[in-house]
Amino acid sequence: MKIKDGFILKEVAGNNIVIATGEQKISFNGVMTFNEVGAAVFKLLDGTYTVENIAKKIAADYNADLETVKKDVNTLIEKMKRYGLIEE
Image 1 (spheres, one colour):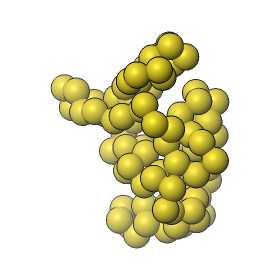
Image 2 (cartoon, rainbow, N blue to C red; image 1 turned 90 degrees about the vertical axis):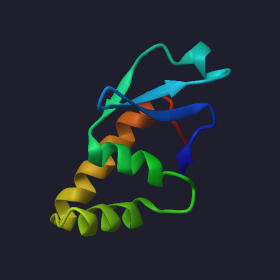
Image 3 (cartoon, rainbow, N blue to C red; image 1 turned 45 degrees about the horizontal axis):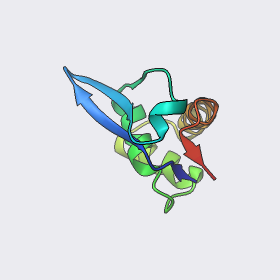
């Protein structure tokens, strides 16, 4: 699972914002912003990590409860799928 080509994450005035480029501009008509953890998840969705690995890394990096992080990561990924940012 990874972020589709044509979506990039930019920091603008302290906010992490997803920007559509190229052909993705046609179908992506919104703005998606992420907090620091959401941006970390976005960056890890490069096709090399499983959802489980992403949750483990985030839990370790932020010293957070793994089960809570798993739920939050899954919720975020489902939202990103609804927006069309992810390919399986």
